[in-house]
Image (tube, rainbow, N blue to C red):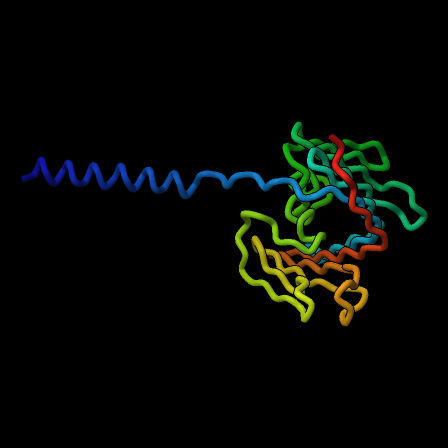
Length: 193
């Protein structure tokens, strides 16, 4: 009877360990969002500080490239992320490297920017496979408010009344960060073969 009880406990412990490992397994990477290029402005509030700049973002399936710009269009920073990692180059030629673009931005600039998911959100889409806490749509079926992966995203369109109004602004609120992304120009790009 004691042997049976020990076997039962051992089987339970093994099952719990396997289940625990499944819970700790990393989630699969997001598929790449459709390619685009945008030009706009970004304002970030974090840890009692603020950052503002122009932004140019070119996203493809293989790579994200962001330029943070002065009002005159000079580069404050150039950020590149691809399968090989991410690199930040500042206007002063300082360089940072990291495994991915989100951790690089956190390390180099001190604030969060969920670039991989933002590539979907900026196109008015939910990031596939990511946990969705809430979705609100406007009268035309467009995203109005999205809560996903700990971020709350509010969408503002050029015309709230016209169904074809262009996305003008995203307002993201994370745990300790607020990001406002104003889109001045937008272009979908065809993926290269």
